[in-house]
Image 1 (spheres, rainbow, N blue to C red):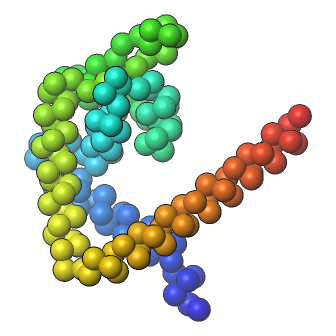
Image 2 (image 1 turned 120 degrees about the vertical axis):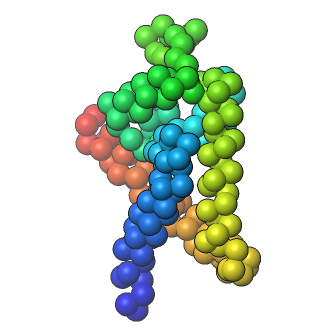
Amino acid sequence: MRESTNFGRQIGLLARLWRTELDKRLRPIGLSQARWVLLVYLSEAPDGMPQLDLAVRAGISGPTLVRQVDQLEEAGLVARQEDPRDRRMKRVSLTAAGRAKFAEADAIAVALRQDLLSEEDTAALEAAMAVNRRVIRRFEALNKTVEEGIARYAS
């Protein structure tokens, strides 16, 4: 069952190649794949979201997020405001220019998906995505178990 031992490497390679190509295609509009991901999450939160939540969703550290958000803010694509419920927190939201830039970048991402997947069978893609979702759920369950074990050990 050699294929299963290569599963993680194959996913890692695919993700790296996908990010690299998306970076290349986004560069002419002044974005990177990393910044586009932040715009994606913010586009799904009409009222914005706390910086920490954005970092968690994007899977990046706080300092990395701050640097990215600083650059997006300088470009006029996002705005930071104090959270009305907790003044210590900053909420990040898209500006009108950010929504327009997201739409432009999203069209580029859609074109990339079309270029890479248009010749693939829809049923095969759905089956591959179903496998990915199941593996993701197993990781989530594993992480929850680890977190619960740490909490038990710490108490």
